[in-house]
Amino acid sequence: ENIWFWGQVLYGFGGKYFANEPADLTPTVNSPAAVGALKWYTDVMTNFTVPGSTSATFDDVVIAMQQGRIAMTVEGAP
Image 1 (spheres, rainbow, N blue to C red):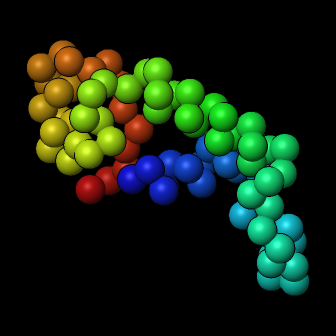
Image 2: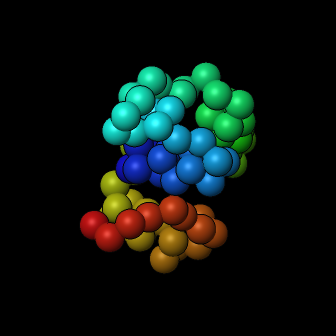
């Protein structure tokens, strides 16, 4: 689900995937907004996640929440 969440972070920082779609599909991955979003995302994934979280399934997350091992998660409907 990281790819879904990444888009939300990118847009939240004011970034977008392309310069002016559909007319101009120049990638904007090096824009200040995209770089800022990636720095924030990297910081969160490096410093504020529990071990194994990047490979956890939806059921793993539910169980961890029920057991009090995690306080929050970013999820969509399974």
